[in-house]
Image (cartoon, rainbow, N blue to C red; front, side, top):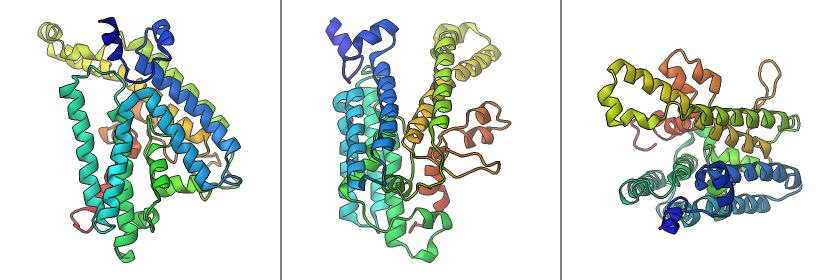
Length: 351
């Protein structure tokens, strides 16, 4: 019985079970943090020893994809096969349907595949597998697949004059090779926690086309983001037990607590939950920066900006003066994906 309980705790490796026992944290969460820390170290190694100036794109693609899949299987076990199956299925659909129709087909198939995985996780497994959800990375992969399909459609099937300036910038003029495609979807920089990035930005990073000679070392920025992420983790671990979010749906709490107190508790419990996401997304941003990905030029004050693919702005969220301000600074890359793949295309059926 104990073995069965342990098996449902995590589908990934049990190599770090002793560390899980010592810290009293679920094994899947220990695996996730360990893989992200290894990804951070790998990112430094990738930038220093496999720079685009001396390493070909094939090698950089291969290493990035291989490391990403290793981390995925380490964390999620055989459930990581879904990452390959979803990516492989949509790549075949791209080849079969062509640039004229691939955007609709890939959007339908990728979202359907993700939805089926979500439904099976909720209703078949009843959240009993593990607390680190394998559909989280699949959401990022789904965004990448659908973005890529729309960008290929823009670059290979739509007249230039119909494209907006943003679509022209992101349009893809040739079909990616299988290695490029799987490297984009499953690279170690973002396979576990994202963030989503455009295909052109990623290929430019791999090939060195986006790097600038004047770009400074990212080490200082990485150190700041890593420090921020672990500070957020400490805050979360310190206060999450004081205001457990599960209490919001506890029958005894709902029946014995005044409505105004419930609202206050809901706000406080959500407030103490956010640092968990701050930790995950800030660390993910640091990993990309450590590899040299994410440089966004210089600000008006001359400071280097490493926020090209940042997924949130913590201070802007905490001091937001409106709900719009909050949304504009939360899960930024997903908001960009929604605009590029849906909102900005309007009712034009050819988009």
